[in-house]
Amino acid sequence: MKKLLTRLQKYMGKRKMLLPGSLLSSAISAVLWIMPYIFIWLIVKQLLISDLQSTKEIIAWYALWALITSILSVVFYFLALTLSHLAAFRVETNIRKETMKKVIKLPLGFFENNTSGKLRKIIDDNAGITHSFLAHQLPDLAGTFIVPITTLLLIFIFDWKLGIVCLIPLIITVFIMRNMMLKKGKFFTQKYMTSLENMNTEAVEYVRGIPVVKIFQQTIYSFKSFYKSIIDYRDMVYNYTLLWKKPMSTYNTIINSFAYFLIIAAIFFINNSWNYINIIVNLIFFILITPVFAQSIMRSMHLNNSVIQASEALNRVEKLTKTKILPVSQNPEEIKNSKIEFKNVSFSYPWANKKAIDNINFTIKEWQTFAIVWPSWSGKTTTARLIPRFWDTNEWEIKIGNTNVKDISSKELMNNISFVFQNTKLFKTSLLENICYWNPNASEKEIKNALQLAQCKDIIEKMPDWLNTKIWTKWTYLSWWEMQRISIARAILKNSPIVVLDEATAFTDPENEHLIQKAFDKLTKNKTVLMIAHRLTSIVNADCILVMSEWQITERWTHKELIEKNWLYAKMWKEYKKSADWTIN
Image 1 (cartoon, helix red, strand yellow):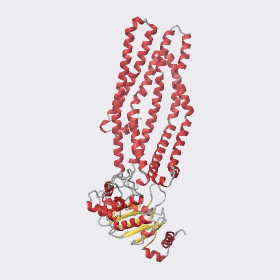
Image 2 (cartoon, one colour):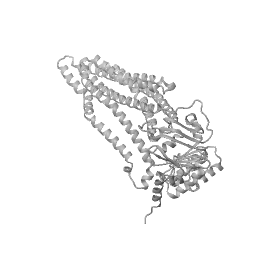
Image 3 (cartoon, rainbow, N blue to C red):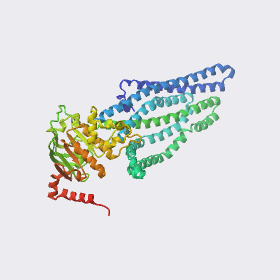
Image 4 (spheres, rainbow, N blue to C red):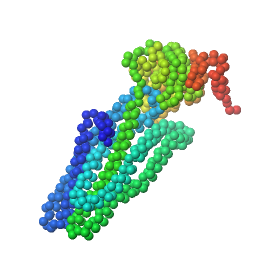
């Protein structure tokens, strides 16, 4: 607990003193909360022992103090919650800010395995968990300790014999709760939060794919990973609940049985004592106050669970912030020209045991177009994404304009490279803002020219507000190939000297492929280009085609030369032409 609070305090800034203030107010509230029980006991004692007429004023005085202490208890608890909420909001805000500052500095490759759904769950939901712990559970910390200790002292002061009887159910329930909340509870919390992250990630992907699901009349079962994440979550929670069915039932039975133990003990003590009135008065007090133990134990259970959850949430957020960022050169160099050079480059992903590419060598001169082909998992995409430093190479170096990419600032690198990927990303804003994202100061003439070159005229004309139309709202959805042409317009407007195309025509139909190919011709004119493609017709005019196999380059010539060699590429070309010419008779 102390370690967790210390970790959370660094996110509080100038509001660190609010936390002890909240705990102090909560402690005062807890003590005041017990006082009405004492005054009620004193009232009952006066009614049973003294004459009613002579005790009216005393009873009224006790009743007044019971009311005053009750009100003061509520006031101090309200103050404790106010202070804890102020601290919690600052912690939640700063966790989000600090995490996002770190996330935007992470290498682009990090986001390949960390989807938006997963990151949202880690940052947003876990920050919310720490808020809930500080704002709601932490003020109960003082009461959780003070109330049962004070109550124990009172019952032993009033009647130590009945106090010992109260210890019997108390010890049994504490033992049961201790077994429930220790190691197994922590292990469950870890699995629970991991399952929520997985389910959240798959849910986002499922929602994004709903248009496809509806078009092809599929159901949730078409997204097997989403369905599996739901079933795994259900089974885990169900099995965990069954695990505690008997212990929790036993706990609830015993924690609510103080009265049974006390009445049996009181009958025994009355039979062996002449002062039965005093025993009855104390019995009434004990029956009134012993439910406090049940509340305190339940509070401690919820508090312990909240501590585990908050600690796990903070661990996950800080694990994200501890992800290694790419080193930045202290004396960054500018890019002098757009030549790209790979020198004996090898690379393996952090989570993989084998290399993704091995000993890659090639040079793309200025204004040349190189293409990489071969099936998936051969290293094509990895090769392309090392140029803009999605990841850093394990061995040797990649140069742009005779400068190692590690010696180029991130801003300089991004300003000189344009990307068009297979999975295009557009923001939920106007088409104009999407197109001008890389060049917000573009003139109207430049924007119109980019749209014309990217073959976007038909897309803009069908929109209700033309370029000012906000996409992803009602009736303003774009097809995949329309999104692709918008992204090409964005790249044309950026006008970077280097262009990276990663399977940008993979899912297009023949008509749209023709339009996209025309847009590519405009985009890549007088540019240094590296393109990856499955459709071989899109790369026949490339200056050089690199054929990759087993994470290495096995062939490198022009299309015509590769056909003449009659090696692997030639066979691929024949198969491709055969499939393209296939028709149903």
